[in-house]
Structures are given as structure tokens and as C-alpha cells.
Length: 158
Image 1 (cartoon, rainbow, N blue to C red):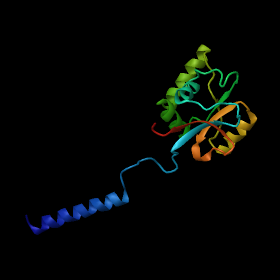
Image 2 (cartoon, helix red, strand yellow; image 1 turned 135 degrees about the vertical axis):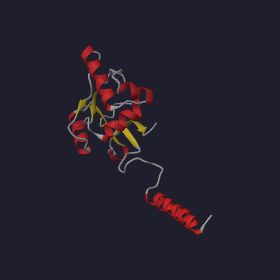
Image 3 (spheres, rainbow, N blue to C red; image 1 turned 30 degrees about the horizontal axis):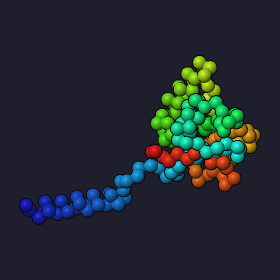
């Protein structure tokens, strides 16, 4: 081989190393993506949920919790990144799949979809829970208030 080829190969290797330093592989998730999303309530009467019970809850298969406790589910807006991660992590479904699912349950009279709020700000979620004493919501785990009753935490990709 001639020296020109060695120099080009060397420069190519250097360029590849620089690219990997500037654009690392690995976790491709965006910043501000929560590690966990917690289902919670401000009502201390609700008992913690198993994963299967949490899945049943957000599929409309549970009518009462902890004996005779009625509940109302909260959902974040359809455009919410947290909602997308929540449904994918808990149920393995996209937001549009869940919208179709809830539409069919609602149409058949077998279920009522969660109440949807207009933004995914944690203050809005907390205010909704204060106005709905039997309310259950979800939010990134690091935003859930200390006084909340944690029902279940789903980890992203679980």
C-alpha cells in the first residue's frame, strides 16, 4: 500500500472516533424522558395495585377498587409524550390504539374512558385530583407529590 492510502485510512478512523464522541450511541431516548410513570391518588383509601390490576384498570376492566371504592381515571391529552410512554410501557399499546379501544368500550356501554385534561402539567393533574377525591392519575415518578398514595409505578420499556 502507498502512504496516501495509509493516511486516508488513518483520517477515516479519526473521523469515526470523533463522530462517536459527538454523537454517542446507547440510549436514544430524548432528554426529559421519565424513567418511571406512577399511577397515584390523593385518596389514601386505595390499596397498591399489582401490574395486572393496573393494566386492568387502564383497560376498563375494573369497576371498583379496594372493596366498594368507586374511582375516576384521569388521562393526559392525546398529544402528551407522557401519555404515549405510559400506554406503551403499561399496555404495549399506542395512544391511537387505546383511543380506539376506549371508543369501542364506550360505544358498547361496557366502559367509560378516563377523563382527559387539556395539558400534562403536574399542577393541573394535582388540581384535578383535589377536585375529584376518588380520582386516579398518572405522572412521571419524579413529579408525584410526597403526600400522594402511590398505587403502581411502571418503568419505561417494562
